[in-house]
Image (cartoon, rainbow, N blue to C red; front, side):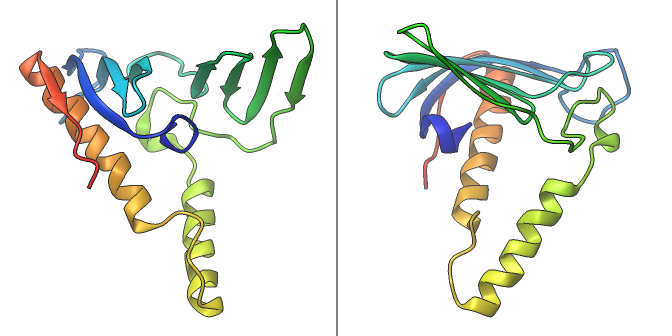
Length: 155
């Protein structure tokens, strides 16, 4: 999501550990976010929804709305045309049980890192990219616990 929409500057929201399954940490977060460019959005994340659903990112923009659901992309342009990329055959992260998620994507990131070292180039996903995601997760949980606004460290 950060790669598509850009950095988030501020979050406010809620985080909780539901009674749906036994977890040692929050398994449901709902937040309103302000992106660094001033745009606003929402984030809903949970492993408590049974049976689990594909990840979904929707970008509502000036000229089109893009919906990325799992690995399928549907762009509805304001002029009435559509651009569609069909889903691939990977399992994706769709389950309510977090330990059942496949590790295909992580394996591809690690393979690209090893290849980047061999080729002396930057990997497609850098350590800084991963750290930005973890800083956002930390801010979402902090906002949820304090039920207040939290600035996101962009590092």
